[in-house]
Image (cartoon, rainbow, N blue to C red; front, side):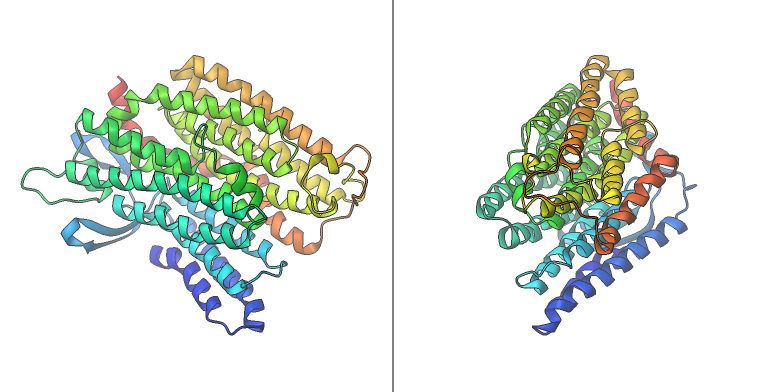
Length: 504
């Protein structure tokens, strides 16, 4: 079933690419959307049929380090290198997979109203991106994870480089350089992990369950962990490895930047929970303070920059750096509460940021094609539904009490206060700053006098069909965040058992 889940979007993209020119180009979006909806349906089916009572698996030293996985596919893919084609599902990746499938449906549906140049290639690249992300989330072999992680670069290179804005060449070049450097370092780290973990006379394996039983020495863990951390922080992005973000976000088409920020950034955070912490516990404890410094710096820098931007797109872009800083803070608090809050916040941020980018695109249409806040104002005048939906998403972003984001940030700060109170106090400033920049974004665009050249009109049914399903999930999780927390608790906690033992 996981094979179908991972490769069904790509199958839809390939079918769309084979359609004849002309009318086939217009049908490509519908074909890709259909396959993406089916992928979401499979994900929902996996959630319904998932047995959350499965117990943890015993790892090295008798420590329970990996929650039991289901729907496992395990094929000895390249025996000479010890590489397995292994996919698995557990409480750690289940909700990230569902988030990916839902948000990709929104991205494809949001793409269809626009007339794209070479539409069949566009939808093929979008479908390939979904397959790469789903593969990274499902991979249970280190080499396979690296393969899917690197594959994500390919479709987004074309999506930004071909269909991006006027500065797309510069944006693509910066994006590729940063991402490629991180990917190459991670490739070297993965190869070193498999080779150095091989016992004398044993066979090399990159399977995660096998690597958990072959702990590396502290010296080897240190430099390998740093290489993985660099790659993951670039992908998120985190300060100061975020330089590719402004140009990429302002030049990528709206559906592309939505999944780039809402989904791809979570693969880096997920890599810490799935790979870096379980495989390199000594290094994670050794560099805990360094990663917490990065987390707090990202929170403060992202929040301050979001407040100073006049581009609505960059307000959301820099706010994402701040939110990913909170996620990193939760992960490297090395507590159950922090890790659970980080996973919940990964899902929350994806669900919030995608409708935000689509709403900004609607606002730009009403402000003469510009996302400059100085050209907006009064757009709520004749658009009560649009204003209400924007308000719900904005309040969720600033983690108002009662929202799912509030539950995520509360758990993160609880974990941080338990282990690193100074970092937690400084990070708490980010909660205040989030209220400042999101209220500023909402007030300047929706209220005040109607700006010259701007027009206020309601969102269309087509726009509502893209945005409202995601907003409905936001509201559901606001009322019932335990839906994720209860089902992911054991899987998330098992991943940081080794780190707690090292610290103690």
